Length: 369
Image 1 (tube, helix red, strand yellow):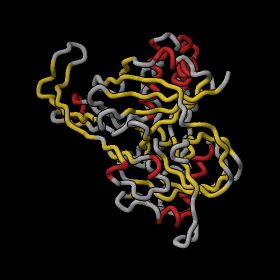
Image 2 (cartoon, one colour):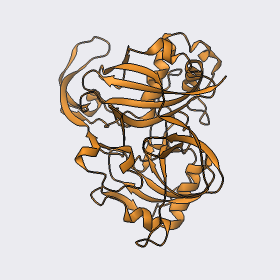
Image 3 (tube, rainbow, N blue to C red):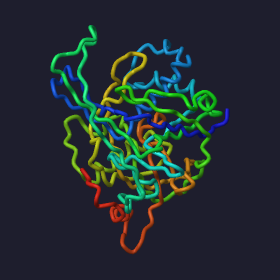
């Protein structure tokens, strides 16, 4: 079958809640509990939504062949469903909003800068170059799951997220002959996030992205979705410090499961909705339990990489930016990365300096290596 590219766009119909990968339940946390929302759905939420579409169309019938949720294959059930929906060699790229003809990226905050401003990162916070996520509170009361009666005094509040009108949550997907998505899914109503969030899905052939060879050389990269490190590169109990050795080790772990081959190092990890920490990475459809926790590198993280060999990557024509997946399980939308060429000049002598000189100092960093 031939590879093809599609855009999966979701127009939110009302506020949405994307729970952080930490537990929240009013019955557990007590009266006055307050649950926050991420500004953008995690890759597990997006792949779960698509798996739900596959399940409803009886494309997950062979889930019975999965007998155990192995630590080495925590997403086996999701991958099986999506293969039947999108094709054997599917791959998702997440972390985007779109409005009109422009694409905006998630950088671990409630602002989504236009794609061309985040790599390497100059003038990110220009108001005409971004979409802002607006958060508001929804108040409810906890219910007893068995009797469906209210739990006395168990009021809680949870955040809901909305975007600029006509902004779409956007996923770029590599499929085989468009899978079954184009003809069967457009204009459907889908559940997204928690607390009865819904959206209208539109699936079209992507005409703004194609395949192009990236030449060897120095590049700046920005994660626009959280990346998973499958194996902790640090010894148990090691205190993580911000030095060049650690930055290189983290980069090696990201490249390990990528189509890109080269060497580099993390430059900056931003403060924001995700931290550089261990998180749960979703819920298993097959086993009805959380997936094993994984070490996450936050979106918005910037890095330098020297690409050693010519590699075919996706190329976003309008912004002249390459698109790649880094870290483990990147075919499910984890570790989506924007790459652009590092331009050396009189104000910088090495790639790290070039990247740092172009960073927007209005964006706080938790770690600068």
